[in-house]
Length: 326
Image (tube, rainbow, N blue to C red; front, top):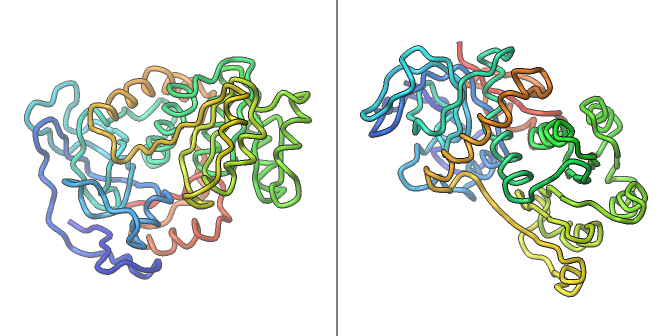
């Protein structure tokens, strides 16, 4: 088969569309013939040599895909050859085929085509596990989403609105904020022109955000705590603004607040399966019912993965960028 390889870490040009050995599904795995994959910022880090895949994972980038089951490995039940699926991966999605633990498979939701389904696994699993399973966002609470126009952000807006929460977002342009508003965001903050701490306090009559979904890390740490409500929760899922920051524990303690930081890729297979099962139970009905949808900015051929990486690096996109196969 063919896959995107990284012979040497570097810029987008380091991605090479090459012939590689076919994967073989092991115990509890299925082989998926890939129709589409999606680009995530973790893929950019892997290309640069900063985010190696977990042991035993294919060396090719790609944390999610959609396609058709081509083969069942030993011990797999509940799935059949030919089933159309999307999958959460630890790696290997930039390829024509990938072996996937069966617990990380999801059926394609009603009303979503097979190619678009590639935009769902990573964002739904990330948002549901962090905002709902860990931070326990409840109806009537306020969620602040940094990077509201990203793949994660566009999904977080929709899921939070679907459960009856108020949503505030930050983004860097009027166009991105307008799109967030179309998805249901209530409070729109241009981080280039406005102070999100002051804006969130104004929007909540001084109370602050109950949950903050943060992709920035160190750069936003102090201000996130200031923007947080009493009993608030910060879920850190990205470190685009650095890895080391200073935390005023007194401020955190006075608000009886909590900070969690998680990644999805390196979790044990059983943990991922539990998250996928929760997403299938809670999120899939919302998608099939038309209340939540994937947001896809564009789709490029898999062989043009370098161009897709440049799109993400320029941050001009809204939602997900897909890589497709014929």
